[in-house]
Structures are given as C-alpha cells and as structure tokens.
Length: 96
Length: 366
Figure 1 (tube, one colour):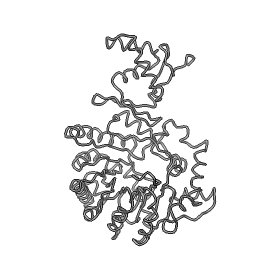
Figure 2 (cartoon, rainbow over the protein chains, first blue to last red):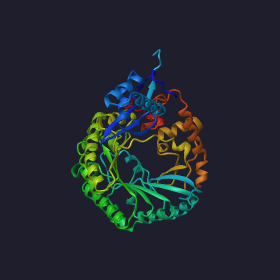
Figure 3 (tube, rainbow over the protein chains, first blue to last red):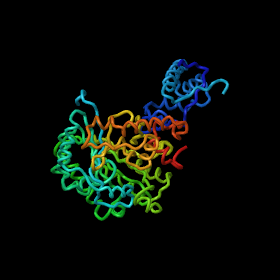
Figure 4 (cartoon, rainbow over the protein chains, first blue to last red):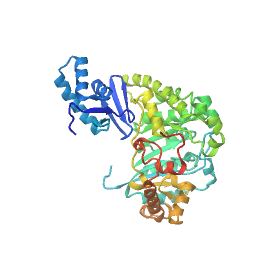
C-alpha cells in the first residue's frame, strides 16, 4: 500500500504492546502473535500515529531532531508501509 | 536430523501413580486408573516408531514416571530408540537415578518447584524442596560434566499460597542455570485443587503482579548473566488467556517473557499421539476427558480407542477414533458461536478454543 503525506494513521494500541528496555524497542502484536524490534524513531512514529497526517508526523520529528523534513517524510512513509503490513497501524478513512 | 522420516510427536504418561499428593494437584482422580505397560511391551512398541522422526515427551500431564521401579531401563530404551526426548518430573527421585540415565538425546528436562522451601513443602510434602533442588543440582552437574546440551525448565503452579515466593525463585534459577520458568495458573476445577479452592484461589490481577515481580528480578539477574556470557533466564506464563498476557506485557514489558504464537491444532495438522499408561492412544490430552468423549459419541457413535501395543502408528492415525476426533474439531471450529472465533487475540491466547467452547473461560476474556 502506498502511503501518502495527507493520510492519517492510528496505532492499534489495543492490539500491540510496545516496550522500551535497555535501549531497544520491542513490539508484540497480540493479534498476529508476531514480535518485532525497532528503534527510538520507530517508537516515536507509533506514538505520533494518533489522528495526525503523515506530513504532520514528519514535521514534528524533523523539528525535534533538527533534520530535513523531506528526508524525514520519506522515512516515515517507509516505516508506516511496514507497520501497515504487520498490522501495527490502521488507516483512518476520510469519512471516519 | 533425518528429513526423509515423517515427524511424530508423542506425549506419554508411563504411570498415573505418584509419590506426592500435592495440594494443587488436579489429576488425582487419574490414580484410580491402575496398570501400565511392561518393559517387554514397550520394547515391542519402540519398533513401531522406527520409521518416524520421534519427539517424545515423558510424563506430560499426570503421575510420576520415575516411581516405576523399571524407569531407568525404560528411559534408556526410549533414549536409544527415539530421536528427541523431553521429560517432566517432580524431581523427588531423579537425583538418585540420573547417573544411570543416558541423556545424549534429551532436549528438555522440566522439574516442578512451587515456591520457597517452606511453601513448597507445605504444598508438595516434607523435604520435597530439598529433593527437587538436589535433582536440579545433579542435572546441572551431569550437563556440565558430560557436555550435554539439553535445556532445563521449572514448572511453577501459581496460587495464593505461593504467589509471594515466586519472585524468590530468581536466585534458584540463576544458581542452576535454568533456561525457562513456566508459571502456570492453578486449575481449581478438579482434584485436590478443587477441594482446596478457597485456600488456593488467586485473582488474575494478583497473578500478573506476582509474575511481574519475578520478571523485574529476572531483568536484574539477566543483566549480570549477560555480562559473564550466560544465557538469560526466560519466563513463560501458561494457561492465561490473551487478555492477561496483554496486561502483563503492558505493565511489565516484553523482554525475557515468552509470548507464543498459537500453532494450528496439532490434532488436525500433525502426527501426534497422547498415550496413557496402558498404551491407549488419544488425538490429544483433552480426549481423555469424559466431556469431549461424550461429545464425540453424540456426533459419531461409540468407537474403540486404539492402543499402541495392539495397533501400528498408521492404524492409530487412520482409526475411526482419530478420524472422528478430527471431524469433531472441524465441526467445532466452524461453529458460528464458537466464543473465540471473533476474538482479535485468538492467535496469541494460550487457551484451546475447543476447550473454551466446552468448559468456558469465565472472566478470562475481554
């Protein structure tokens, strides 16, 4: 699925648990039984996926980390594409 | 591994007799089922497994196999005929016999300990703790001395009397290099556990808190272990529905906890046998229970239970009993009102959906 900058995604907090321990971020999806490891930035994106557009998430991250917004936007899109495949986030449809 | 051979998983209780009478035992009624197979019968049976890649679990559910006077002879017979052996024991006798046991193809030894010395002895009997620890020590020494590669686990049945001492297990686990502690929620529906249900009852919330406390201790101990190159000790919560596993993960984190993905039902997908002490073969342990047997008779009529002495493995797997069992499970799984069918957490829940349909999972679910 192609992620667009105006899309809105919500993290499926009712299905997944994200835990940060010793510098690692662990995710377990209770719907699929799959586990993942990600980094601080991955966790930040999941935390920010709550009724925000992808571009807004990129703006916040770029500001927080002093980085170029276009580069950050690319990374956010890629991360959300992966998160969609693994049922970690869900797209909010415009009429919802 | 011989990839040309078909895989066969066998769970086998060699006797339902036991040398303990634990307060939380839910299998005490099984002791009325006397009798077991002789070494002569077992020798014949081993030949039937030769065309399979066999994974055998000795003593998976009830009784204590080491109480058989010929246990060492049986174990060594299995060890030479079976590819991979797993064993569960209460550890009372193990230290006395372990030197004579051939452990080269042992993959897992699980010993039951349910708390500090005082608590364990109250629930399991005098000196049960010391004897189980002696077995753990003997096992650890044999593993080191003979350069063996099996894993060691502890089964801990969690209830009100031992919930406080669960966290104390961390030191013991570290001392004997135990790989995993399985924390099992007590089943209060049958046996001694039912008789003592008021004493043993522990709320789910308290279960999760006790497990969480142990997990916090393990996190500290594992940090020290990792520094000296030792494997971390893991914790596996058992017989908890996904609701409680989710709460545990949310509250105490995911590191060092084994959350398992549900595998497809082995009755439908694997060559699997549960064998009782007289060799009767069942598609899974639940089929030894009257309620499930009655359901099967209701749907398909009564059929003979196959037996590993009288039948070949192929005859058992293709028998009317096993075919009816598979059909019954398919029927159940297609029920629109199967309570677990619409649950988002079905893939990670430790409870069998058929069990939930027949016996219920009151207050356990979302």
